[in-house]
Image (cartoon, rainbow, N blue to C red; front, top):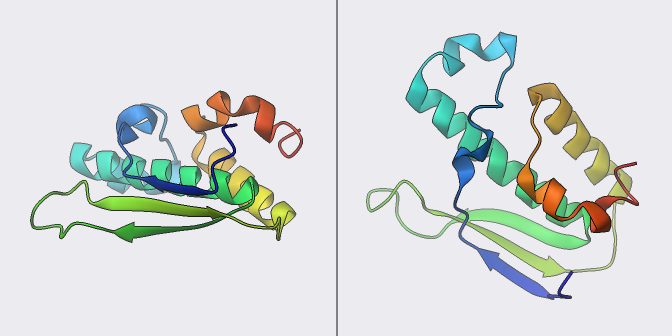
Length: 119
Protein backbone atom coordinates (compact mmCIF):
# COMPACT_ATOMS: atom_id res chain seq x y z
CA UNK A 1 0.00 0.00 0.00
CA UNK A 2 2.83 2.40 0.85
CA UNK A 3 5.17 1.05 -1.82
CA UNK A 4 7.83 -0.03 0.69
CA UNK A 5 10.79 -1.77 -0.89
CA UNK A 6 12.07 -3.15 2.42
CA UNK A 7 10.14 -4.22 5.49
CA UNK A 8 11.65 -5.16 8.85
CA UNK A 9 8.93 -6.15 11.28
CA UNK A 10 9.27 -7.39 14.83
CA UNK A 11 5.80 -8.90 15.05
CA UNK A 12 3.46 -8.32 17.92
CA UNK A 13 -0.17 -9.19 18.55
CA UNK A 14 0.34 -12.84 17.64
CA UNK A 15 -2.42 -13.66 20.13
CA UNK A 16 -5.02 -12.63 17.53
CA UNK A 17 -5.32 -16.19 16.21
CA UNK A 18 -5.32 -17.90 19.61
CA UNK A 19 -9.09 -18.07 19.82
CA UNK A 20 -9.36 -19.21 16.20
CA UNK A 21 -6.81 -22.03 16.19
CA UNK A 22 -8.66 -25.32 15.99
CA UNK A 23 -7.50 -28.49 14.33
CA UNK A 24 -8.77 -31.78 15.77
CA UNK A 25 -5.57 -33.63 14.89
CA UNK A 26 -3.66 -31.16 17.09
CA UNK A 27 -5.97 -31.29 20.11
CA UNK A 28 -3.24 -32.90 22.28
CA UNK A 29 -1.17 -29.75 21.65
CA UNK A 30 -3.95 -27.18 21.68
CA UNK A 31 -5.44 -28.33 25.00
CA UNK A 32 -2.45 -26.79 26.80
CA UNK A 33 -2.64 -22.99 27.04
CA UNK A 34 1.06 -22.26 26.51
CA UNK A 35 1.33 -24.66 23.57
CA UNK A 36 -1.80 -23.23 21.98
CA UNK A 37 -0.38 -19.73 22.43
CA UNK A 38 2.94 -20.62 20.81
CA UNK A 39 1.21 -22.44 17.97
CA UNK A 40 -0.93 -19.36 17.34
CA UNK A 41 2.17 -17.15 17.38
CA UNK A 42 3.94 -19.33 14.82
CA UNK A 43 0.85 -19.49 12.60
CA UNK A 44 0.41 -15.71 12.78
CA UNK A 45 4.00 -15.03 11.74
CA UNK A 46 3.89 -17.71 9.03
CA UNK A 47 0.72 -16.17 7.57
CA UNK A 48 2.24 -12.69 7.66
CA UNK A 49 5.38 -13.86 5.86
CA UNK A 50 3.33 -15.75 3.28
CA UNK A 51 1.10 -12.74 2.59
CA UNK A 52 4.23 -10.70 1.91
CA UNK A 53 5.43 -13.40 -0.51
CA UNK A 54 2.09 -13.23 -2.35
CA UNK A 55 2.64 -9.47 -2.69
CA UNK A 56 6.07 -10.07 -4.32
CA UNK A 57 8.36 -9.69 -1.33
CA UNK A 58 11.30 -12.03 -0.82
CA UNK A 59 10.67 -12.92 2.81
CA UNK A 60 12.29 -14.74 5.67
CA UNK A 61 11.72 -14.99 9.40
CA UNK A 62 14.80 -14.87 11.62
CA UNK A 63 15.69 -14.73 15.30
CA UNK A 64 17.10 -11.29 16.07
CA UNK A 65 17.46 -11.45 19.85
CA UNK A 66 18.65 -14.51 21.71
CA UNK A 67 15.69 -16.39 23.17
CA UNK A 68 17.27 -16.32 26.64
CA UNK A 69 16.46 -12.57 26.72
CA UNK A 70 12.90 -12.70 25.40
CA UNK A 71 10.63 -15.26 23.77
CA UNK A 72 9.41 -12.52 21.38
CA UNK A 73 12.52 -12.63 19.25
CA UNK A 74 11.44 -13.03 15.64
CA UNK A 75 11.96 -10.57 12.82
CA UNK A 76 10.17 -10.74 9.49
CA UNK A 77 12.46 -9.40 6.77
CA UNK A 78 10.96 -8.63 3.39
CA UNK A 79 12.46 -7.10 0.25
CA UNK A 80 10.34 -6.18 -2.77
CA UNK A 81 11.19 -8.33 -5.76
CA UNK A 82 9.76 -9.34 -9.10
CA UNK A 83 6.66 -11.53 -8.73
CA UNK A 84 7.72 -15.17 -8.61
CA UNK A 85 5.79 -18.37 -7.88
CA UNK A 86 2.77 -16.27 -6.92
CA UNK A 87 0.25 -19.07 -7.41
CA UNK A 88 2.39 -21.41 -5.31
CA UNK A 89 2.48 -18.81 -2.51
CA UNK A 90 -1.28 -18.28 -2.77
CA UNK A 91 -1.95 -22.03 -2.66
CA UNK A 92 0.33 -22.48 0.35
CA UNK A 93 -1.30 -19.58 2.18
CA UNK A 94 -4.84 -20.77 1.48
CA UNK A 95 -3.95 -24.30 2.58
CA UNK A 96 -2.48 -23.00 5.85
CA UNK A 97 -5.40 -20.65 6.49
CA UNK A 98 -8.10 -23.16 5.61
CA UNK A 99 -6.48 -26.14 7.33
CA UNK A 100 -6.28 -24.25 10.62
CA UNK A 101 -9.64 -22.44 10.17
CA UNK A 102 -8.08 -19.02 10.79
CA UNK A 103 -8.70 -15.50 9.50
CA UNK A 104 -5.53 -13.41 9.94
CA UNK A 105 -6.08 -9.68 10.44
CA UNK A 106 -3.36 -8.81 7.92
CA UNK A 107 -5.44 -10.44 5.18
CA UNK A 108 -8.37 -8.21 6.16
CA UNK A 109 -6.19 -5.08 6.32
CA UNK A 110 -4.74 -5.81 2.86
CA UNK A 111 -8.00 -7.02 1.33
CA UNK A 112 -7.74 -4.65 -1.64
CA UNK A 113 -4.13 -5.60 -2.42
CA UNK A 114 -4.80 -9.32 -2.01
CA UNK A 115 -8.12 -9.44 -3.87
CA UNK A 116 -6.52 -10.24 -7.27
CA UNK A 117 -4.92 -13.32 -5.69
CA UNK A 118 -7.47 -14.51 -3.12
CA UNK A 119 -10.65 -14.55 -5.18
